[in-house]
Image 1: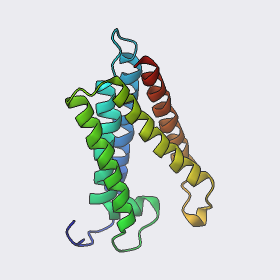
Image 2: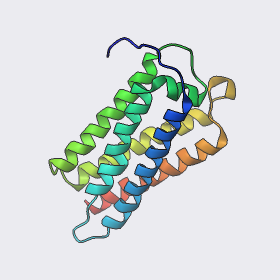
Image 3: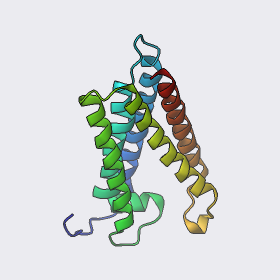
Image 4: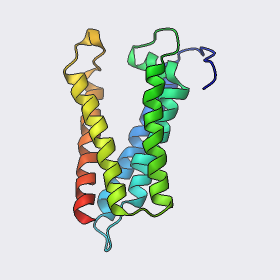
Length: 165
């Protein structure tokens, strides 16, 4: 990545991207729950939205708009934080794999596994926050509830997908 020109840390950009993440993820989860009931069951569109799109949007939030995201979470150090950018790159990785899985037709088991990977990541972040103090950067209760709901639903869809595969 090119050197960071240290853009202004406006948390509104990141907040909009976070909202887009939850909207795309929620749509993908809902569609996945519905299409798993089809004969044959499918997670393709759900995976594309809940894993692919959220991974790509989260990459943009964490890596491209990292200062905005840091400001949104109260972690703005006034400089580039490579660890936060690395988290964005991880999101990019599973987002791209999800897109490839759907476009290349890798099948239900792979798509369900991607739901599980994202669920385990989100639920691990939740546990980290629940075992951290506010001084250590624990998020507020509202975002933690949203994180828990998102992680649990990803886990449910991934599990149902594996059972249907």
